[in-house]
Structure formats: structure tokens, C-alpha cells
Image (cartoon, rainbow, N blue to C red; front, top):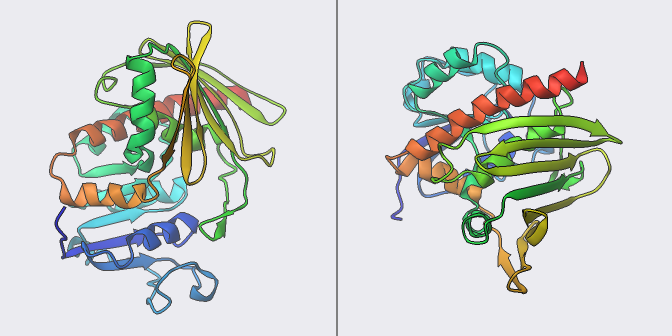
Length: 307
């Protein structure tokens, strides 16, 4: 892809993910200007690569039209506030996951679909993992997939993870799972949530996605980091993928072949390049809309268990 210049990007939020987004895009040839806005971010305590940047405290809504893309990296309440204020923004708007719309979901999606608004879903660009999942589904006929997804609050990218205590961990990671599963063939498949419960700080979710039963076992409260995807055909295990920070292992129980692949470590950057340089965003837009819809359904299911 040829290098492009002239793109101006504004990041709203100086928290962990706002800083990570900034560092992923810093000093890229396709970006002319990269600005971050935060009321509380201090350069001396930040991980920002550019220690000479002038951090703006407030957004000037009269000048936002000059930006090609705005990225909202805030908590859910702040995201919704910014979305209202940026309703008439005509260029690309990216919202950090999860975006939880609790009421009037159809009205929101109608408005969202008419604008150049997208969710930040970098796992969608983890093509090597997605391709291997597609093989298990389409060639090995997997009809049951289990995601084991444990995480902790240890430092990554230089900052300790601060999980949102107002939502379940299942709600936090659901966008990752759905982005990994989603492809063109499954773009019209129906998703139906079945059960959610918590036992000994581990959360369990099950749902049907098309003809496939999906199970999630996850937690961020047991001080364990482990990610694995298990594939079954009926009651027989046919393989698994073990995901580490820099690479992943694939075990094919049918052929008895083990493979190792390096992960894409720049999926966030790939996402922004895609949005700025490609004209056809139809599939990614569809993914964003479905993610918001299912996130709303998931919120209701989890909230029903918790109340």
C-alpha cells in the first residue's frame, strides 16, 4: 500500500487505551497530525512516545471538521455523551469497545448506520487466527466452539489494566470473540444468547451463532492469563488454538499436526489504515452494527442474572 499523507486524527481520552492508540499511530507516514485530548493525562506519568506533545484539555467543536478521523477512547457514559455532541461529524468516527446501548437500540442503530461511525474491533484484523477458525468450521465441520479467556490486571503496553467494574468481563471481551468468529459467510447468521452465570469468579456464557454452539468461560478475577479456543464436532474434540502474546499454536487432532504462527502485533494500526485508505467499509460496518445489537442483548442477559 503506498504511503499517504494528509490524515489528521484526534483521540478523545488519555487513559490506557487512548495512549495505546496514540502510540500505535505515532510517526506513521499516512498521518499528518495526531492529537490527543485529556483533562487529567500527565506526560511525566504517561507511556506516550512523544514527550513533547501538547495535550489539549478541551475539544474545540468548531475545529473538528478539520479531522479525517476521531477516536473515542472513554468509558461507556462518556462515549455516549461524545456521540451526541459529534452527531453531525461527517468524517470517520471510531468508538472504543464495548459500546453498550441500554435503551432504544433500534433507533440508535438506524442513526449509527447512516454515518461513518465504527467500533474499534482490531481482532477482526487478526487474519491468521480467523483463517484457522474458518478451517475448523468449514473444512472440519466444527459445531461447538469453546473460548477460554482468562486475564489479569498486570501491566501490558506499559500500563496496568483497569477493568470496567460496572460491566461483567463477558461484556468486556464479547467484541473480541464476535470479531474473531465473524466472516462474510456468517454475516447474516442469527445469534441467540442462551445462558449466563457466574460461579467462583468465573463467568460462563453460551449462545448459538448460526448452526454453531458457542461457549465462553472467562474471568479477570482469578489472577490467571490464559486463552484457548477448543473445537468440537458433536462430542469429539477435533482441535484447539492456544493464544499467547506474540504467537499462537494450532493443534489439529484429526491430522495430528501442530503449527505455530506469529500474531499480527499491529492490528490496531491496520484497522485505522483500513478505515482511512479503503472506500468499501460495508462488511466492517455490518460487523460494528451487529456487535452493538448483540452487546445490547448481552447486557440484558447479564443484568438479569446480577439483579
